[in-house]
Length: 313
Image (cartoon, rainbow, N blue to C red; front, side):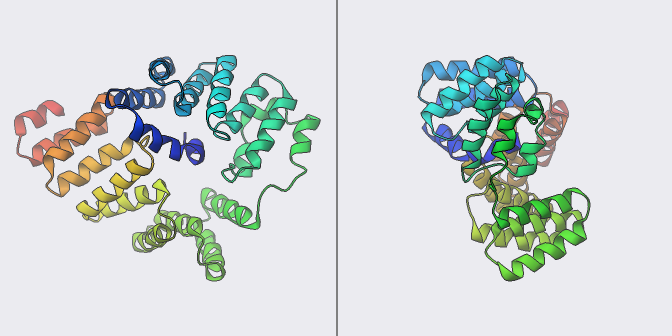
């Protein structure tokens, strides 16, 4: 699901803030159901939300995702087109994917071009490795799309660094990113990538330093706060970690896992009632998550509520 983040962060915030309270939990249940593989339930949740508000593009987009996972490509396409009608550019990539699945290369290429023209385009490797496009990758329409150079030098460098990290060449990644950052010190995404490499190398202090720098340069990236929050939690900086997880949820309310991590941080900071609220909500969404039940029991144990702690475990 991570690959949808670039088009949906503002959507998450809009939905979370403006939806009426009874529908917020339904929205979260729809997301949780999809993440647990219950796509029919997810689609049902978003269908109810569409009845309540047919103007919200996020509901159509998410139902489209769920329908696509159940093989209902035609229905998913209708939903993605509905989302796109309500917010230009939000579903262009998914529409391209649907048309590819339907073996309609001309339409797929048109929508992929629209996606590539956007500032939130996915990395080239992500698109070219997407198995959905295998049905059209030998067509003239597909080849025509890639005659253009869609990616800047910065994009290409970022892709190279990501490849080095994913290939296990973390030392080389750190060296390369350090060289680039010496020349271009305002690239927040490079600090984030170097932090990731440092973490893989076990250098948490340097990772934290780079995440701080990335956040100073760009405070709109929930992943930066997520990574820093987890580091702070490990270091026993509970209040600061809780603040970072709150920022994650503010920027991207679909990051439901932040509730569990914030629960741990709040418990560490001695804010047990708030901690219980978070973990109880999370368990209601993911009732089969053993880690969540352990976290619940740990919080109750810390509160010296031993009887309930045993029940939770």
